[in-house]
Image 1 (cartoon, rainbow, N blue to C red):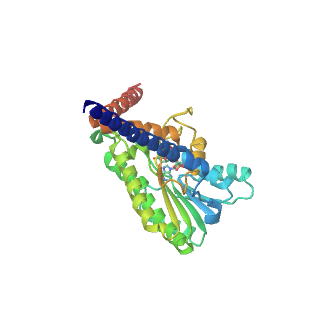
Image 2: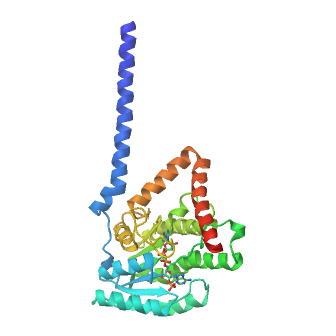
Image 3: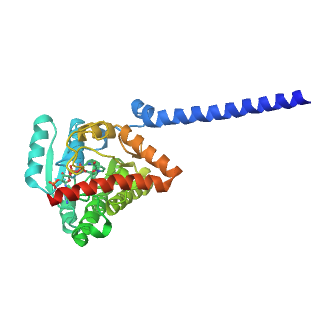
Length: 318
Ligand SMILES: NC(=O)c1ccc[n+]([C@@H]2O[C@H](COP(=O)([O-])OP(=O)(O)OC[C@H]3O[C@@H](n4cnc5c(N)ncnc54)[C@H](OP(=O)(O)O)[C@@H]3O)[C@@H](O)[C@H]2O)c1
């Protein structure tokens, strides 16, 4: 009787070990597949050149937007560069034009803190172009992390931020997507931020605006998938640009070109992604911590951003 009991317990522990082992292997396989294999194998990737003759990139004269413009030109797409400053637009068009001689560049001046007139003008200028790729990259953030009520000129600043980060994405989709739907082909890349997915106190309006971009992209993507339009939302962590004020690229904060080279490889494969593995690792770690202790994860991010704030305020005094 006792022997039978022992035998039953050992069988049970064998079954439990098998189940746990199977789950661990399943988890590891899906982690490796989702983070590396699917992108390495380029399963379901999209040939961007076949989506249309033109790409449109907002905020295209610096940082991530300029890198998208360059990578898309390298793939053979003509590129419409849009930003506020004509001289910067002309300089980028010249620089990329010399590098990618078979590709055409158009420059359009628009300040996305404006809400009405620019879209009327952009609609007219983009009308009739065979646009295959739209990159909604333009965005603005705080000068430094700050308490909501202490942000300088907050009425104007928050209105500008919401116009630039939310209104621009919505309206550019409204202008460009009808042509894509008609042709039954197109890719929209909406640039959100890791801030949309992790706690981000002291940058509350910025991260909320990026959460809009994420949610809008998810639902828009589902609506238009059957019309041949792919919508991707990318959620970068830190990239070494003017906005992040990081001058020297590192593994965690790559140069815009390094970042975009990786991110572009995920188009058609991932609907939502940080676009860059070290950023995924960071977001997963913070979210794992959040699932264990939401308070602790918020506190850690808050302390980090509060230190950045304190340094910025000290610099402003000196
Ligand atoms: N860098 C990061 O660490 C990071 C992290 C997460 C998400 N992001 C997101 O990535 C996107 C690009 O950021 P970035 O770091 O590459 O920025 P960036 O280097 O500062 O470049 C911003 C670009 O947007 C243009 N721009 C700025 N305000 C504009 C406005 N009101 N109207 C029209 N164009 C405007 C700028 O050109 P002009 O000055 O000539 O207009 C420039 O071409 C943003 O949506 C940002 O939220 C960045």
